[in-house]
Amino acid sequence: MSRTLKLGGSLATLVLVLAACAGPVASPTPAASGTPGQATGTPGQASGTPAQATGTPGASASAVPTITPVPTAPPATVACAGGGTGGTLTGELTLWHSYGSGAGTEVDALNQGLALVCAENPGLKVNVVGLDFNSLFNVYQAQAADGDPDLFIAPNDSMWQLAEVPVIQNVKDQLDTSKFLQLAIDGSSYTTTTSEAGIWQVPESLKAVALYFNKDKVATAPATTADLLTAVQGGAKLGLLGGTNIYHNFGWWGAFGGQLMDDSGKCIADQGGVADSMQFLADLQTAGATFYPAYADMAADFKAGSLDMIVDGPWAAGGYVESIANLGIAPMPAGPAGPALPLTGVDGYNINPYADTPDLAVAFAQRMVQADVEAIYANVAYHIPATADVPPSDNAISAEFAAAVQNGYLRPQRVELNNFWGNFGNALSQVLDEGVDPTTAVADACSAMNSTNGL
Image (cartoon, rainbow, N blue to C red):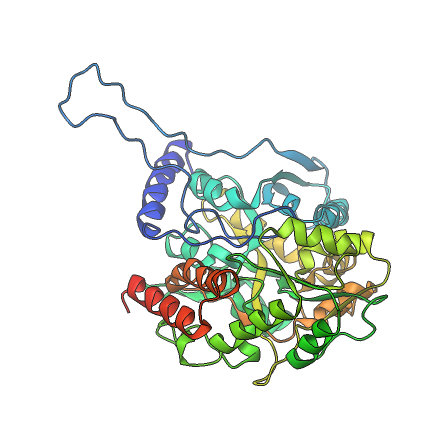
């Protein structure tokens, strides 16, 4: 594809994405170091709007147009030099990631996986670019139609929006779905508004939060919400994210029988269970649990030994392992209605359809999710493999995490979710910080979500 055609496509794509994502801004999940979060703007929204003149048409020629710069990616690092012969993958690819937002172990795993794949493919050159998580999607959408990068790996936070444009490739016909866990395929699937049913990423791993605990202080992790409350009342030091952080606390909803939305996208959280879960969190706070407005403070206190238990995800495990000699992982405690159901995301390789060699990108992605590379990610970075043929990890923490997140609620791939974060984050804050009745807070949040969504 010519550079001119790609550039024209890029501008058209950017306008389409901005139009598609206009509307209320989603409330972010924590984006502090070590936590994957939502983009600070509406997922998929570029950081600037298309170029706009300061004056109106026909205004004085002295009016100087101002242009908002289109975001660009930082320089690439050459991970595999290429230029040789042999192997099954030949050519040049540019891969983007946001692994620097975690504990650092993911970058190590990526480098080890690339070393393995590139050694067996001397003719493959791979350029690697690391971006901040909160800018990855925005920068990608601004550059994708110019053919750069060939692929990126990220959670499926904005997958449906990228598929609607589309600026990611439908890989349904190129994947052998039997090689993947069904949860990973389900989380990578989406049917567009034009009725294109697809798998929009090559799944790499699953992620959800679980209960971390210091085994030197908590011999056995609480199995139920009643057990957890009893433990806190007895002096166990529990730290949870408060403020407006609904992501880390979403799993409690399922434990009390709450649901977010029905098949039409209508919020039904006010129909029971969700208010009970928020009352449970208020009871924990009364019993002595600490709710942290800032993620970094909670993580630091757990590492320092000031907390016995926290709820967090596998992306932070590397930092906790370094600080806590006897670390344990367990599922979030089950409640009276059944297991906790934390939001489950799927990390995957997203392929750029505007790139020069998308088939090579798909083949490379599929090689990067074979069992040997997946085992590296599990052992080094605590990833939960998306493929079905990876043996249990030799890393005990990774294996415990994989077992802990067998239950989960797949992140919905639909526009209505955009108006969940802010409304229910505020509801949580009202209950914990202002003492608002949970039933009232949930009813108001659900009503506001539906109203904004036109339901």
